Image (cartoon, rainbow, N blue to C red; front, side, top):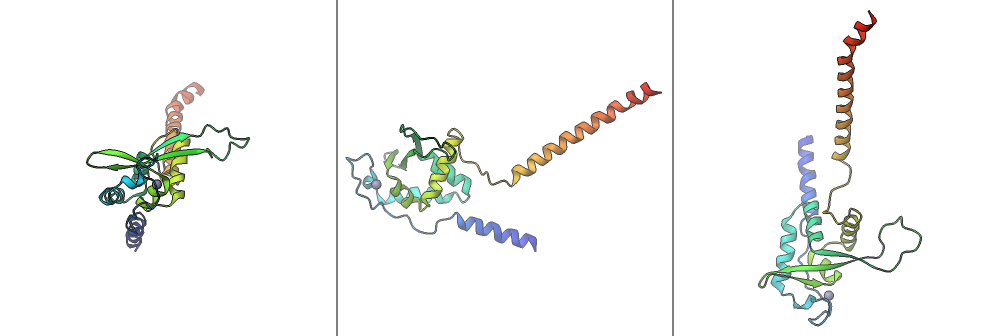
Amino acid sequence: MSDLLKKIESKKRCERYSAKKLPSFPKCKHKTNSTFKCLTLKTQDVARFHQNFYKLNNKVSQDNFILKHCRLSKCHRKRLKDQSRGPKNLSAEYYVTIKNPHKQVRVCKSAFIKILQVGKDRVTGILQRSYKDGGSVAKENRGGNHKKDRYAQRQRSVMTFIESIEAAEPHYCRAKS
Ligand SMILES: [Zn+2]
């Protein structure tokens, strides 16, 4: 029973991270002479990029894919007082990798999320987390195994402690007698 539940659960998880919609071609007006080259992308480029993303059917790999195609840049505007809510003025550049010739084409954020069919909040979240970690790749940090690991570690150190007492005991006894 629980195996079946696990199977259903993992199937659900896969579905959540697989493509629901087809990529949509950027509808913005960014032509070649703009910073963003959204409209220089061909339909195949868009489709291939979308496909490469959904080939990865787990969240962490997808997040890393997104990170690999973004470049973070800090806004130089100064932030006021409240530093606690993380980098508010974080801005990023978004790139789509194309073939023939192989290169990265800079696109605007709205084109990027339309092509990948991901929520803009998800992208923002990934970037903010990466920024806080100093630009490292995405990690799953929703607890889970972390807690288990910490517990195991603690248990190990308790065991070592007990062993060390047991090892020390004979001396202690001898000294007393
Ligand atoms: Zn655009």
